[in-house]
Image 1 (cartoon, rainbow, N blue to C red):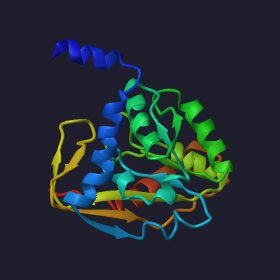
Image 2 (image 1 turned 90 degrees about the vertical axis):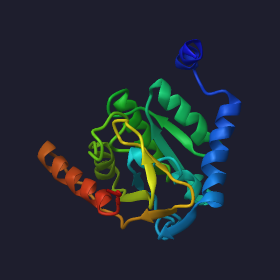
Image 3 (image 1 turned 45 degrees about the vertical axis):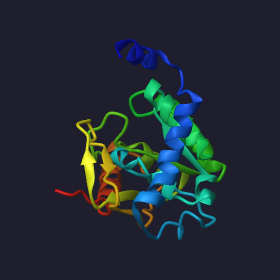
Length: 221
């Protein structure tokens, strides 16, 4: 077991069988074992406008499987430049998403430059703004900075599970229990002023964006 774990840690990417297993899990399982509810998923994201999409790190498990293929094909995801981020990238690419590598803790400048270019080329750009290391439900300023520089609105997105297991990770990653209800919620867009010029103003709008996402986030006690 120890040798297998060490081999996984040095593996540059997931083997094909593992990537396709994750693809099956994320794409097919929700439709077979869960009740799916969708609240306004395409009214904004399927329009001609492009957005900065934000969603919490602990809600990623079935998010992509609930998006329409048309939305996925217009989306680039910002993924950590770490080894774990490579595994995530392998799975996301099977969904047709393109990847921008980098995060708030590693190669952040590369990520912002790649995201800026993607917005200018009419892509949605998706962030997990509390990743890759948290704190949980604390939005880092990257998405807000990008929205201010490009004039692109921020759209909050979550998958709320009616019942779930919670892992003992920094984000309390949620694994929905079979036969529960998964609700995909796409909130109203938030317009960030383009003339933000100070750290104080950026922090004000970072908090507003964070509250905007928390407003549609439901955790079970």
